Image (cartoon, rainbow, N blue to C red; front, side, top):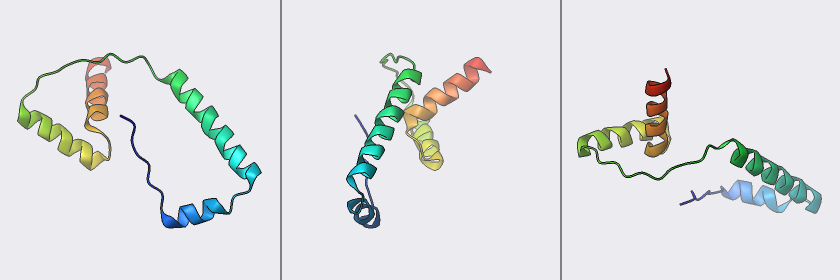
Length: 84
């Protein structure tokens, strides 16, 4: 599932003032950024994992404090512990 991005009213008002060339530049930069991200993202494998509920709740709580999805935090923690 893709995240939903919300924009403030001020941002939307400012965006309406953009010229067609500014909009085209923005879209081109967005496309280039998206292509670079796709090229650098490693392939993923869907897995099923059972873990104690209390451990999952701790993981979710820490992820919330760090401002990231808990699955991303889990991947980061695994990578740090396995590669370090």
